[in-house]
Length: 512
Ligand SMILES: Cc1cc2nc3c(=O)[nH]c(=O)nc-3n(C[C@H](O)[C@H](O)[C@H](O)COP(=O)(O)OP(=O)(O)OC[C@H]3O[C@@H](n4cnc5c(N)ncnc54)[C@H](O)[C@@H]3O)c2cc1C
Image (cartoon, rainbow, N blue to C red; front, side, top):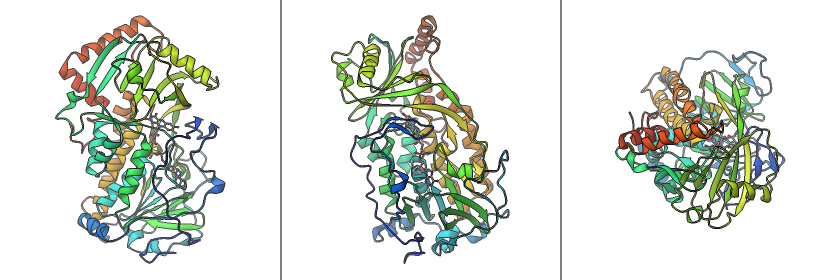
C-alpha cells in the first residue's frame, strides 16, 4: 500500500507517529552482553518482540522542508541504472552452508508495495537499521536529494548507553550534515587527555588544541550515541522524501530486475540500493550468507556508571583519563551528567555486579578520591573483532557494526561506522545522479575496508606495554614514551591526529 505521497505503507496500513526523542535518562540495563544482546537483569531499554507493532514513522511535513530539500536535489538519471546480474538473493534463516555466495532464489512471494514501484522505489535507497551508521547514511543521502526509506526493527531509537566518544574527524563530518553544533552543545567537551597512576600522579597529558588547523573541532565530545541518533532523526524530519519506519524488521533480501527487494513479513519493498546498517548481528549479512570471521578478545569490558563529580573528587582529572596500573587499569570518561569508569576484566570473571563488589573495585582503582564514589549502575560485555570480507554484495552495501567490529579501546568503531556512512551516502548519490560510475561503490567498499584493517583495528588494539603482562618495568617505559610525545608539540599533534582518525577520512578538514 502507499500513502497519498506515493510512499510505501505497511500492508496492515497502521501508521503510528513515533515520539522521536531518546527519552529520559536512567533505567538502563545491567550487564548487557554485546554479543547476545541479552541482559542479565532487565531494565527499560528495548521492547520485547512480542510487543512490537508495525509502526510507520512518516517524516516530512512539507512547507519549508520541501523547499529546503529541493535545493539539494539532483534528479537521478535512469540511464545510470547499474547493470543487473540476475536474481540473486536469500531469505533469512536459509543460510547456505559453507557458501559465501548469494544463491539464486525463486521470485519473492508476497506483495510488492505500490509505492515502491514509483520514483521512490526505483531511484531510492533502503537503509536497514536506525543506529548511528544507518541514520547518518540516510541524512547523507537525503541532503543529496535521494529518496530514502529507513527500516528499523525496534519501535523506537535505542536508549541504551553505548558508545560515547565523538572524535574530531567525526564532528567535522557531522558538521557538514548540520548536526555537529547541537551535539557539541549537548555533550561534554574533552580538551585534554591525561594519563595518571592510581595514586593520582599525572604521568602525561596532551592538549587537544594541538590539533588546531587540522580540524574545525580540536576536541572530542563525550555524549551518548543516543543523543546523536535523536539529532539525526529530528534533522531527517525536514526532508519530505525520507521515510523512517519503526517496528519494521527486515527478514529477507533479493536482488534482481532493476534493483533490490527487501522483505518485511509478507511485504516486499524495492529500491536501487540497500545500505545494511543493522548492527553486529546483521540479519542482512546472514541472509546473504556472508561469512563474518570474528574473534573474541580475552578480556571483557566492565563499565561502571557514577553521578559523583569525579573531577572534583580527583584533583586536576581530565574528562578523558587513563589510569595506568599493573594490577588494575581503567579509563575515566566524563559525560555532561555522569562519569563512566571502564575496566577490562578477564572473560571468565562472573562475579555479580553487586554494589559492594563495584564499590570495592572502584576504591582500589581510585584510592585518591576525596569522597566515596557513588555507583549508579554497571554493565559488562564481550569484545569482538571482525571485518566483513567485502563491504559490498551486489546492490547491498554494509556500514558500521554490520561491516566491522573492533575493541572499544579509543572509541573507534562507532566513529568509523559514521565515516563509512557519510562517504557511502555521497558515493551512492553520485552514482544515482549520474556523476559517478557504479564502480565507485566497489572503490568505496575497498577503501573503507582498508582503513579498518590498516588503521582502525591496529589502533583499537594498542594498550600500553606492561598493563596486560602486569610488568611494572614495561609499563614505566611505555609511560615514559608517552611523556616524551606529550613534551613534543609536533609528536603530540601526530599522536592525537591518529587517535582522532583525522588521517582516515577523505572529506575531513584534517585530510592528510
Ligand atoms: C551494550 C553495548 C555497549 C557498547 N559500548 C560501547 C562503548 O563503550 N564504546 C564504543 O566505542 N562502542 C560501544 N559499543 C558499540 C557501539 O554502540 C556501536 O559501534 C554502534 O552502535 C554501531 O552503530 P551501528 O549504527 O552500526 O549499529 P547499531 O547501533 O547496532 O544499530 C543497528 C540498528 O539496526 C536495527 N536492526 C537490526 N536488525 C534489523 C533488521 N533485521 N531489520 C531492521 N532493523 C534492524 C537495530 O535495532 C539497531 O537499531 C557498545 C555496544 C553495545 C551493544
